[in-house]
Image (cartoon, rainbow, N blue to C red; front, side):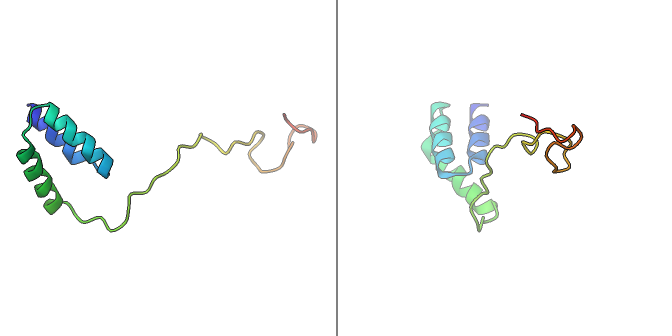
Length: 84
């Protein structure tokens, strides 16, 4: 069971750093290094080659950060007063 968990971690590791951590975890779970290497070689052969790096998207808040009616006009709907 521990080797299956280790294989899942290795499979989901996408970046170099992720792979390093997955290898360390797999070794801590008792998976021999030669099996880790064989599994990673097999994964590399079966996965499609990624031609561009993964897209990193910054975390953003929901909404557009503006208050009001959402029609783009400042103070619309409140007599022209600006909300603070």
